Image (cartoon, one colour):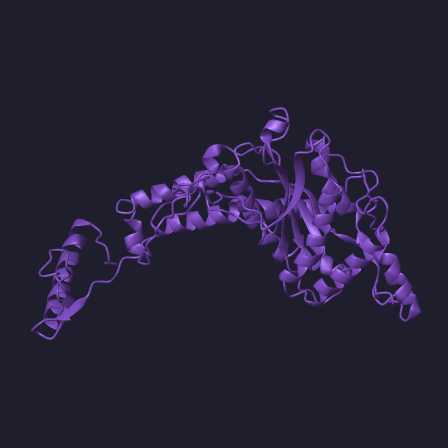
Length: 429
């Protein structure tokens, strides 16, 4: 929406004097929903204008997450705040320098899972763990994390074709990153028991939830396996013995990925924004947050954090109790995407590597080995024979004209004898 014209002249002077007058008592912070929606429209226009860039999504979603956390307050203790964290660290933080020391203690992070940095997260931050009863809220808990991806569509984001594009490869290819981020969050925060995530593609989002903490053995880092390139087929057939240890490592990783916990898809490819009717005086189309996105923001809080109610006076994020519904086609597509991202693609790659070293899985057809022809060489008589064959007993005798005539005469004599005795010889009528 276009900005309103600022007053000029005497009107501006009076307005300025009015603004500098200090109130007798501090009043509440008032930010009308009209201004909120106006800012959404401006920031959404900027994000769409530079839709080929993920970075231009950060202003609008930073604006949303900051104001959303401003409406959330823990009712049990004032020592807990819900903070918007850009580039949240799911890993080991660098050690702090103790009082009275000049350097921080050295730490050994070997064996720790690699760190992950989601674009945004809503995190519970506690200033003093002793100020509230033990077990009320973990010292640093998570509401959800957000991962943003660009939607470089040749259609307006409110067009149906953009919603089709947003649930294509750009969605499927980035689910693996969300899985890695969730596993890093669990691995580095032993008290986290479930994690919600929003995968946001332009102006559409998918909500995921890992309802249970995964088995600890699935959170340890995997060892890199150096797989040699074995391109010769005959060598692959005999590769099980020399490459047995490498194959065993690949099979162990396959079992590990089969145990990987997949998230549940709560909402799939829903719009973040609602678009109102454009007035003739408006330069841009007015927008507001969709009911699907508002439901996704409130859901983890309502289910797991009853001490953090959404403020009833918040017009920016009104409550909505109706869960968004998925079509049967979207639900099937979402399950396939998740299965491939969490297990399928990686398991198939590991199987291909094991097969290249000669391993045969149940159901595989063992390839037939085609023997290589012997290398021939020329002897002193000018004839070619197989190298190393020598005078093998199974080598066929050399046939000449004289030997052919002698063979024919011998067969004729045998035929005469056989006719007298009433016998039949092969090849003789």
